[in-house]
Image (cartoon, rainbow over all chains, first blue to last red; front, side, top):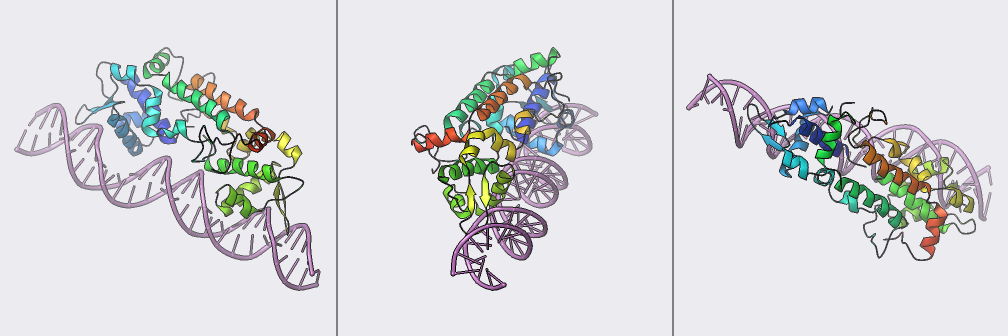
Length: 144
Length: 144
DNA sequence: CTATATTCGGATATCGATATCCTTTAATAA
DNA sequence: TTATTAAAGGATATCGATATCCGAATATAG
């Protein structure tokens, strides 16, 4: 459904958000270890998230990554997915046909569209704050 | 959503089904050309579909592939997807966490589950016969 | 039986997603 | 200013999905 890269991106965003209390920064190594992802590869992903203003970064001693309360509030899962996997996650034809459209639909166009729309609206309606709340309540788990 | 391999598999199944009038067989080259897929790679995919009794094959002159009316009736999209992409298409954790479960759900477990369940039930409720009917009526298109 | 057509299936190749390495840039502290 | 710390970013490597090649197996026709 999502690329492995995107999975790391979501996990990173959630982890950093959960650690971002009172301006605290989280280092790359901490993040990678905590979400069980390869360090250098995770660095690349975080760079992209920073560029899209999904997370923030500071260089130098006591630097690291963080997600401000404002970011947590305004960032939805759809933003992370769009940043990493791109818009075609929600637009692509289910059979990979480039000319598939409402006017010339592929054999599974309408059935597929319904599922994809639901995926998109799920992502559009889930923001980081919501996810962190459930994590803190112990209703969900990131370390598994 | 589906692997490229699985897209070829679905396209092949639909194309062969649509051509399977009165025991007519379709050759590999015909299939590959018609659904715009690489010949040799398509051959591999068709082998798998044959093994799972989704389509049939006959060797030798006038041989080729076919999908009997019985197959068209009893085969659902979920069978093709399961044959190529496997069951984890419907079971895997949205964040790639192996220990994610109902008891220890990942942060997007329930939201993701809902989408995945819908995908699965869509695939379970769409069979080849239905798709062919819409193709024949000119409501959908395979060549694009 | 022989020649031909066609799928089967093992071995190999290519390519893009995934992953690593290393140098540069920026921030802090002494 | 200099040393140190940590992210940024370019270059390169690995691996699995995708794709190709070729000989084996099987069916048909003459």
